[in-house]
Image (cartoon, rainbow over all chains, first blue to last red; front, side, top):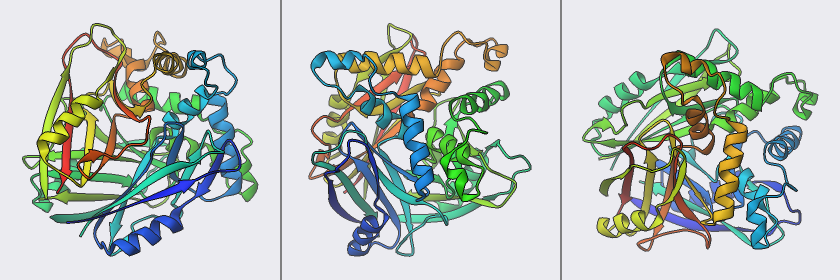
Length: 137
Length: 137
Length: 137
C-alpha cells in the first residue's frame, strides 16, 4: 500500500471562480506511481468546494448562477454577526460538496468521457489549499 | 491490499429514473472476496448520480419532484447555446452528488437498516456507466 | 494495511440538531494507530447527514434555516402516505450528504484551519448510528 500526498494552492483574482484542475491531479497521480486505487481531492477550507463535471463555459456560468440562486449572497445571515460577510460562501460549499474521490485503474484516472475535476472558490482573493492524496498500489 | 473493479451499464427507458442497485453492488463485493474495506460507486457521466437512501416509491417521487423544483428543466441555460438541452441534468447530478463510498465490514456492506444504493439517471435513453471499485483485504 | 471500525450512537433531544464530532473522530483515529490514510465517517440512517464546516453558532443556525427553506417540513410529500411524516428529513440528508472522507497524514486529521466534522440529525429523539472506519498504515 502506497500513499502520496500533495497540496495545491490557489489565490484567485475573483471572489467566486471555478478552476479546472484535472491536469494537476493527473500529474500528481503520475508521480505517485500508483496503478490501482483512488485519489481523494478535498478542499481544506469551508468556503470552497471540489466537484466533477463538464469543462464547458456556458455550464460553468449556469452552475454559478444556480448556486447564487439557491444560496444567495447579501442575505442577513446570522454568521455575519461575527463580522464575517461570507455566509453564502459556506452554503454554496456545502451544496456543491467539498471533496471527490476519483478511482484509479491501470495508472489512469478512471473517468467517463466528459468528467473533469474543478476547484470551486466561493471566497477567494487569498491563499487557499486543496489536499490531493493518492492511495493504492 | 486487493482491488476489484467492475462497471455497470444502464440504458434507461425514461429520460429521468432511479434504479435500485444494491443487489448488483453486493454481488460484486462477494466476487471480490474482500472482508474489510470499502466500495466506491461512482457515476462515469456528468448527468447522472449515485446516492444512498430508502427504497420507497413515494419517496422516490418526492426526490424527483424536489430535484425538478431546485434544478428545473426548460430554463434558458447558457449550456444550451452549445446545442445541448440538458442543463438541468447537470445541476441535478451536482445536487444529488455523483458518488458514494460504502464501508465493508465482515464481508458485508456495513449499512444501517434502511440504506440502499441508487443510480439516478437525469439524461437517459442511451448507454451510461457506473464504476464499482472494491478496495480492502 | 490496517482497518479500525467504530460506531458512534446518537439520541438527540431535538428533532433537528447539529453535533460537533471532531473530538470523537480524533480519539478513534488515535486508537487505530494509523499514520497515513483516511477516515470514512458515514451516517447509517437515511434521515441524517455528516458534513465538514465551521463550528460557529450563527452559521449552524443559517445552515438549519437554509435546509428548511430548500427542503421544507410540512409539505404533503408522497412518502407520508406510508404513515411517515419525515419526507423533509430525507431531502435534507440528501442535500447535505450522508458522509465525508477525512485524509490522515502523520497520524492527524489533515484539515485546514477551520474544518470540523458535524453529525446532522434531521429526525432525532431515537437511537441512530454513524460508522467511523479508519483505513491506512
